[in-house]
Image (cartoon, rainbow, N blue to C red; front, side, top):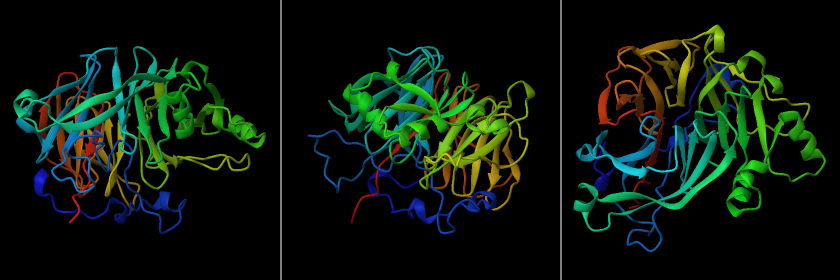
Length: 388
């Protein structure tokens, strides 16, 4: 990766079609895949700083990490796929119990955290700003990530380890208690943020119930079971785990298989039309696989971490599962950088590693990015390329 101050412009993410055959049958042929979930196109710069202009250069790449063991969220600044100086900075170290999955929305600067222990999903407003007091006060880093808007619950009474956010700001999570893939619209999240609708008052409905309310002209804020046993998905939602969204309105998630152990990776439409005659139907991408933990779109494949020590890829253009590497201890969260690299949280090794994603092949070599005790979920803030 080029230096932060002089990065070369990379090809646009949307220019790289993800050509999974079974998926493309459900989409317009010209529609490409591109990961947007948990992948920022532009860092949110604190208003009033010297670097909030459109032509600011040298903005950082930041990797956000959760640790349920440490009950906190921390971050590092990345250069050449490694943490600068191996410095881990605290971001949120109070008010959490078991933070697992994390997701960042670039346009609003919002970080979402699934706290399994408190059975809530929280939102925080973040800002990137030059380090106050100089680089010495930030452990040698030029930039710091700060919490601008404090903790607010957006979902309560929920058993969720994984969250995702799409480009439009719609929140998705996998719910163990309901065995479903759930969605909150950006409108609902705005109402919660404005104080119009307390999270504990949200009504939880099936997709068909949401259709009926929509047809009746209701504008009630809802949590919708988008996919689940009570939403017509059947066995294609069975112990849902990690999930990922792309820039074309698609979602992919893993199923642990519950007590059967018959894992799977499943694709669906993230925002299906509210029509009772068009119940969203997901597609199994690869048959039975090792029980997935997390999943992520990339340009060449869908990547998933297994419950054991392995990392797999479902190669584009074919329903073939490839063992990328079995050198992890307990691989969990995955985040793709939108180019040719993904980062994997190894919960058992207390470290994050980078892997190449340009080719779907066996025997990839991982590279240590940073050590972080109990690391589990990952999110990423990537600065926009500088304008000429």
